[in-house]
Length: 146
Image (cartoon, rainbow, N blue to C red; front, side):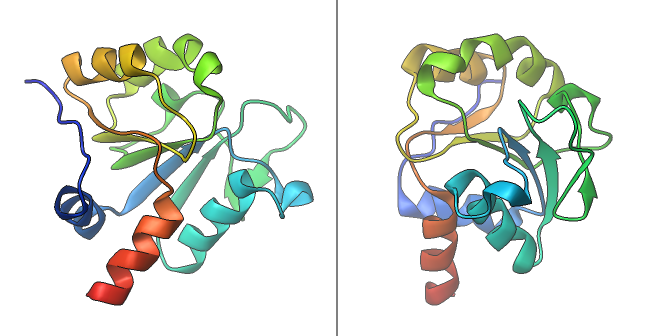
């Protein structure tokens, strides 16, 4: 089954209403609290989501937001509703095999991150995709409307 490219508020709202577990690829530790790759996952954690940290760097860090870190998305036990990605568009392709193996329901590429070929590979793998949107901004909009 092919995944869906999620592009409008109605589709995003349906995604947000069913979201519980969010893995964050490229999350930054508390030492980078002012950067979006920490600030946005911290917000999601504060509002009650299970946030699973998957940092790309920081090999010495074993915990972020009070949760143990994972080094590969496919190593996470249980289903991931949304994989929130904080990686440059040019750095996405090396993560494709791991993401396809993990099979999260949706891959969310944060603001400024877009790669149509990468997205197409995910869609063919049955994974929904959001590109170039901020999960925190969309969540705040959704909360204010519901």
